[in-house]
Length: 239
Ligand SMILES: [Ca+2]
Ligand SMILES: [Ca+2]
Image 1 (cartoon, rainbow, N blue to C red):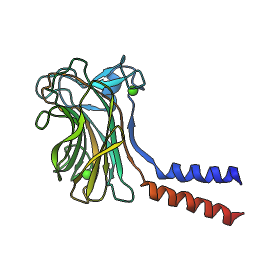
Image 2 (image 1 turned 60 degrees about the vertical axis):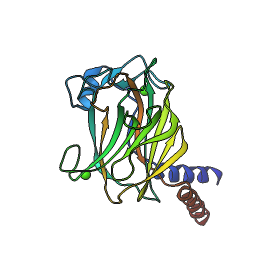
Image 3 (image 1 turned 90 degrees about the vertical axis):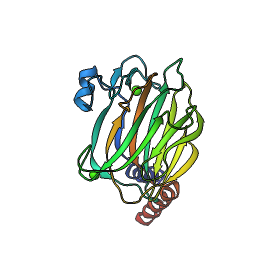
Image 4 (image 1 turned 45 degrees about the vertical axis):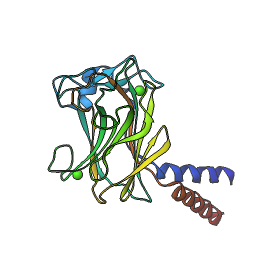
C-alpha cells in the first residue's frame, strides 16, 4: 500500500508540473551548438560561457554590448496561458558582472504574438525579468506590458546569483525574488505566450549572466494538495 501510495503521489506531481521550456545551458559544446538551438538576432551574439554557471559550468551572457546586439530567441512550439489554478512559472538565475555600476540593461522576456512565435504578427504581451535603467536603477526589475510596465522590485541588484520569477495567473502576475514574494502587477487576461527572448539587444555598460531559464505551468499548492488527496482516494478505492 505504501509503495502504491508513493507511486500515486509521484504520478500526481509528475503530471502536475509540465516543464514546457527549461535550459541550464550545460548541453552545448560550443557557441555553434547554442546557435543551432536559438536564433541570434544581431551580429554580436548572445554568448555561451563555458566557465561560469549557477551551481554548474555554463551559462549565457551578452558581454558588454553596443546598441542592438546580444539577443537571441527560441519559440516554445506551443501557446501557454497562465490561470489562477495553473499559473505559468517563468524564472531565471541572473548575475550582474563583478564590479558593475547601475548602467545595466539586460533581461529575458516571455513573449506572446498573434501568430505562432517570435515576430509572427502583432506583439500581444511581454513579461521581462532582469535589469533596466529607466526606474530605480539599484533594484532588480520586471516588466508586464499589459500591466505595470517596467517596475522596480524591492530587492537590490548585486553580483550574486539571484532567482527572478514571474508567476503568471489569470489577470495578475506575481513577482518573486529568490522565491520570496515581492509584488503583483495586473495583466490583460487571455493572451498566450509562445516565445522566449534572452538579452535586451540594447547598449549595456556591464554584463549579465543568465542560467536555468524555465517556463512551466504549475498548479497552485492548493491544487497540488487536492490532486494528492484525489490520488489517495483513488488508491484506497482500488484496494
Ligand atoms: Ca548552467
Ligand atoms: Ca501566439
